[in-house]
Length: 165
Image (spheres, rainbow, N blue to C red):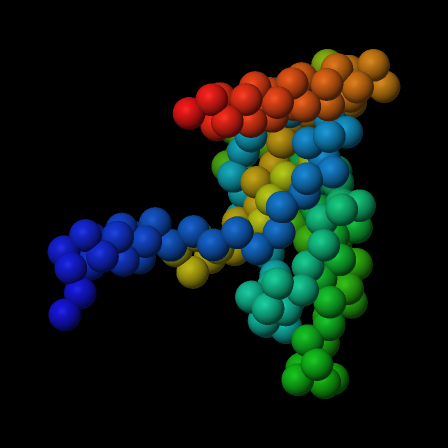
């Protein structure tokens, strides 16, 4: 019989229901993320099956306004082999679902401040597929180097603390 803590952990895991499908680590290196927004995404059935199989890549993806709607472009979702004739094109534009006030605020930020919208992660939340979008500014080369140096220093400090204990 499992212990109480194991049952509590499983129950908590079921409540959260978040499963990371794809993380865009390159985006965090290339851009300075100022704000993160969770968005829904309109998908076809074969795309959902491929995403649940973790056959997705956000490496080259970006978000762009077309009219007053926001779309995810260049996100590669592999074809689902069992879908046959009802398969989807891997690089099609996919509409992102946000409230109108959020869309208006993001549109203003992109147009006035010269920021960009990039997908940071794709995950399951309560059986729905969500995309974490970042409102970001591009990093300069010296900013990237400084971030790498800072990360390396933190690693060395953590390593020294572990060795000391």
